[in-house]
Length: 165
Image (cartoon, rainbow, N blue to C red; front, side, top):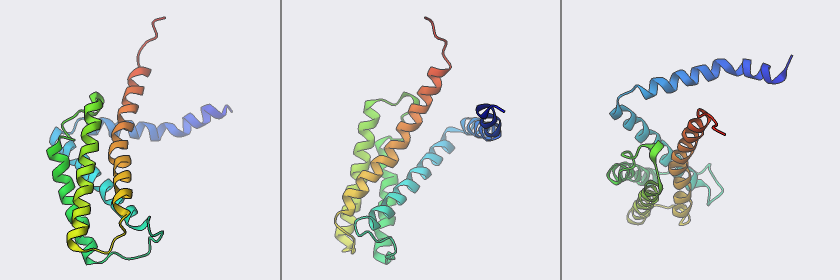
């Protein structure tokens, strides 16, 4: 048996299910899609904060206290407001250009400044380098997912065209 054909046959049900899921998501109303992307961004921001908290200390076992939890909640709430106000959800990903990338950079930077201010004003015991790690991770997760989705859309668009020459 041809190994490529075998792999394609084994992957077909999963690919068909993924295509079905994508088509169902496309049919969802715009405000529901906005809420889904906002929720996904907040999960990515929370994960970025979690990793940024443990990475500088090389210790992910240290439990976060009440003050650190308050800092995380403040940052999540402010990030949601910042991302909405900056227009991160207005740009259609398939038409996203340099201006949208600049907006992502600004929004993540403002989110990082909120995190730094929350740490400073609550006197939370967090590593100082956490702010830089958070900024880098949030840029990679929030910005990177949008760029990856845009790249996959562009690749799918190019693959469906007919070669002329």
